[in-house]
Amino acid sequence: MTKIAVWCRHKNDNVIGIGPKIPWHIPSDFKRFRRLTEGKTLIAGQTTYESFPNRTLPNRKIIVLTFNPDYELSDKQNHAVVTDIKAFKEAEGDFYISGGASVYKAFMTGGEGLMPDVIVDSMYCGELNPELTGKKVDITPCIDIMMKDYRQISQNYERDNVITTVWIRKNTFVDQAVLKHILLAIEAED
Ligand SMILES: NC(=O)c1ccc[n+]([C@@H]2O[C@H](COP(=O)([O-])OP(=O)(O)OC[C@H]3O[C@@H](n4cnc5c(N)ncnc54)[C@H](OP(=O)(O)O)[C@@H]3O)[C@@H](O)[C@H]2O)c1
Image: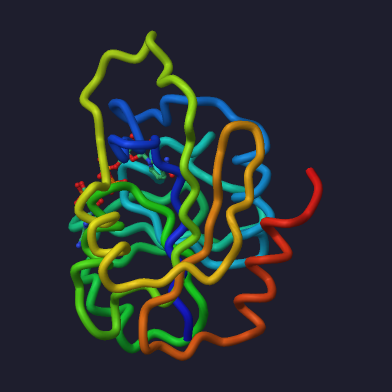
């Protein structure tokens, strides 16, 4: 079982959202995310799930983290609700942790069995969308943990003002097939 956290954060301030929205629009970043996660199982917080178009993403299983056991899913066949994050300690399979901030933080600070084995860290170096006025959501505590407990194992991949790197948790064995999939997804042409 491998847990992979995937995010795109803003350089320096680690902002990943303003209100419910991502404050930049980089098509190649969405495409990289799609290549990474197509055919895979995602974990998304309820707020992030609500922000997906029609509350879904094609060709993916989505597990929605919410404290509400009666949460209504958009696709009962391919989506599921989990109310206790500890369920992932024992779960079989690979999971792509897809945010938002509270979910990244819950896994990154969750200790053994919850901390992601791999992080795909994308960093957007441009300007934030000035039209968005909601609350800024950042993942600085997660980046602090990444810098301390993880090591970068890839080169810097730069595309459209976004720098992507791959990190693995120190002293952790990572399935080579998973790493190969991640690197191929990052390196592929759009
Ligand atoms: N740039 C990126 O890579 C990226 C990726 C994803 C999201 N985002 C952005 O991140 C922002 C959303 O982040 P957020 O932190 O506000 O919301 P979020 O993490 O997406 O969702 C928060 C909700 O998830 C549920 N939840 C969180 N931790 C839980 C736990 N341990 N157990 C059970 N349920 C749990 C709760 O749902 P209930 O209230 O229903 O109980 C909580 O209200 C948006 O701006 C979004 O666009 C950015």
